[in-house]
Image (cartoon, rainbow, N blue to C red):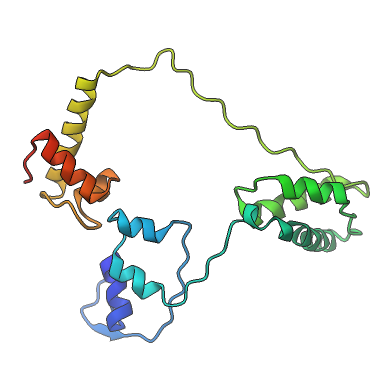
Length: 202
């Protein structure tokens, strides 16, 4: 898929599904991702040439937790919007409530903040805004019955996993369709492990 997208960007050509005719297109591409594409390129999971094609004018949007000063302003906006939609008078955001919102982590970013504000406006009923406490982290699973592997077991499992990945990729290590990408490893690391385990590439 990356190769096909690269062709669209470079040649400005597409072929519709089931069609044999190549068509010229004149489009602008806006691409968004929550991944670190430079790291994905380094790991061999994303094409470097496609990265540079897409990265003509990059705009980085930091997560909400890195711009906490914006949270009170966003909260006020979402309060007014929610109250207007519900035909209510906008409840006041106290300084304490604003500090409480700014202190939260917001893994869901602006959308999570908006949902929290909307829920608080619904529950306010002409009273003060009350926000849910952040969810507690999930407890770690119990390890009493977990299987224990020896170093020999782990080495054998690694050997089998790398052998299977090489078989699926016809011995190819580098590139988005290589064994390193399949194993979520750096190609150089995989190459050194193949050598250390005495494996043969297909």
